[in-house]
Image (cartoon, rainbow, N blue to C red):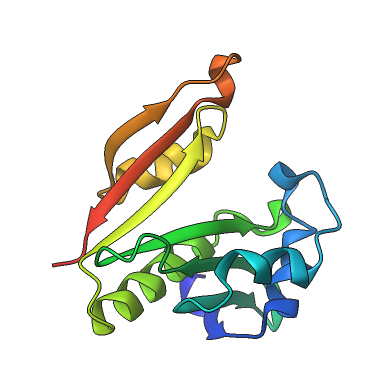
Amino acid sequence: MKNNIIVKEVPIDEAVKVNRNVIEFDGKDTKAEDFERRYQDKDKLIIVAYYENVPIGYIIGYDRDNDGSFYCWMAGVDNNYRRLGALTALMNYQMNWAKKKGYNKLKIRTRNNRREMLSFLVKNGFNFVSVENKEDITENRINLEHDLI
């Protein structure tokens, strides 16, 4: 089934549509402008994974730190289409893209309560760098990195 996943670079509106169907984001009606403010005037990548022409997952990344790393800011897959390989396809596309652009590292942050994402990241070679503690331990932010060189 993984061969049926197609990843394309898209305008932000396409990623916003998928974001509404990612259960972890509670169906928030986030607008394109909310995303655009974050990566405005920065090198960015907006990609969507399609399964049978249906947009099912997305990644938005940008050059946040200006230190040779690329930051994977938002990533999600529609709960109804998980286990098809969409996140793997998206992450591989992003890593190849970032490597070709000369970035040496991919950074990502997730939360302690996002167990599926944590598991995916560990299985795919990301290393834990730091933890930002929050009052509710399940909301702790976990910073991870993956070398691209």
